[in-house]
Image (cartoon, rainbow, N blue to C red; front, side, top):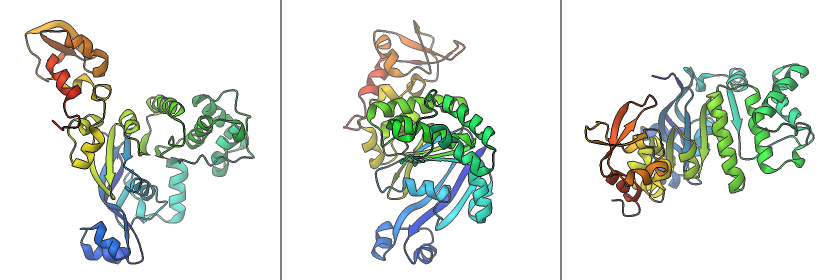
Length: 343
């Protein structure tokens, strides 16, 4: 079992004068509508979950669902109204200001939708800036910043000013700056939503490349379901402050827990999201045909081959051992089942 890095126990964030008192009186049964009638807005409602070391948890929902508020509670940019938040076993809500600043400087990296680059500093100076705040000497901070420039693919642009960069390049500087302090935990709040679709896709690919290399523990906020499916190890879908479902992308697509989640998934091109392992029959059969496919293959890439087979297709692992089988009819069910009619 992986080590738990972030742990939330019944976290609430309620905005309003009597928020704490009303939460105590409700015994944890918070009804957003009745709270609103009494002048309180419920931002996060009874959120409990864990994030493992090296995991990327994507929190998604529409505007006003509470996803950014949840992230702000976990980084303690906002104080939760109730519940407990642990970072590597440390009770975040018990820390004083000095300890909190220390934790943020040494453990956490943050990237927001607005790039917030310093216009009078060059790319390399922007990236080195948080290191210099920590007290790192100029030579060392510039050397580290140059490593980050290479990591995010901005070689040759290190002496440019932010105004001389495209939106995607500015976002790379923001990412490099947050990585320069070598955070263990990385919080990203809609970091790509201001970018046009083509640059956004490039940034997502770049981000996955970085994560494969760095293995950070990440909470990533988005309102884009396709982005969540592409990036996440697990997805938490929020509505009105409540986490409606927290699961793997495959399980959310195949087994939506609520009507609200199902609406997100019904238009998803399943063949582009699911891999063979998600839909195979785990017990291998004897009457397999000649075709074998990898359990890690995206369905879209092998669907045509499988559909030409009359016999069961063997599913193999990375060592070429048979670990299951798949019927051609299962491909048809997976691709066309569950669209709109929920069948």
